Amino acid sequence: MRILLVNDDGIHAPGLDILEDIARQISDDVWIVAPDIERSGMSRALTLSDPIRVRKIKEKRFSCSGTPTDCVLLGVLDLVKGKKPDLILSGVNRGQNLAEDVTVSGTVAGAVQGMQMGIPSMALSQSINYHLGEDVNWDVAKKHGADVVKRLIAHSWPQSVVMNVNFPPELKDNTPIIEATFQGMREEDVNHLDRREDLRGNDYYWLGYNNQDFIPPLGSDLRAINEGHISITPLHIDLTSHQVLNALKKEFLFKGDDA
Image (cartoon, rainbow, N blue to C red; front, side):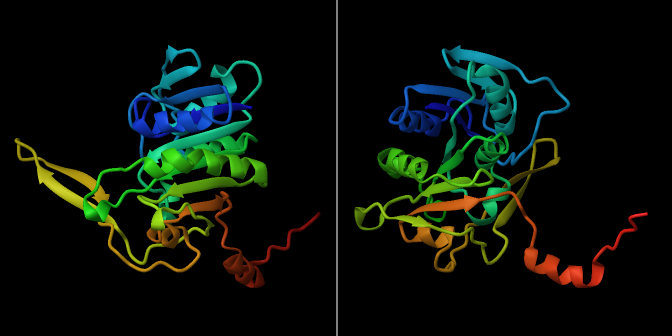
């Protein structure tokens, strides 16, 4: 099996080393294409107005000046020689990609791009207890990542779906419970804006998250992580609200003229 690894935290991110270890427990044909610096929050951004520069780090390992989506495109279309990858793994991200996070996540975007190119793809993220001021603990991803990936490969899924895997900061009762979940939604906006002033009196800003506590619904990705479970959420890029669409059709059904 040929596996392509990408991420949004950059070529030197510790999570990428963990992802490589996970991949090498599955195959010895592992390729890496990752951004030269951190590109978090890029979603599915493409580099269209500037050249993308690539540097070969060593055999089968490249960095590029582009986004996670660029990395997948470059890897599949040019850098990975011979046959295209059989699997794309994106991550392991430093921090969770849950609920509405998935729409801005570069980690998830890397997997989505792989899916769009007809390659089974997964996004993997290691959650952090931000509200406790803790740094990332990679232990759960390290110990259980390969098992989760192997089980998903054996299961298989539709071509239009990507698997979004999130590991909790620590396991409940030190037991690896894997839960299939739906994409949750936080009860309120958790974005935080910090305005500061530079030495010349000009304003500048830092964006971040408040990470307020609330009780998510059962079965959601948020609830699974809160309960110390490993969350697996099947995602697709059809953002249509079919319930609203069906209601709109009653009033706005288009009847074209075949003439």
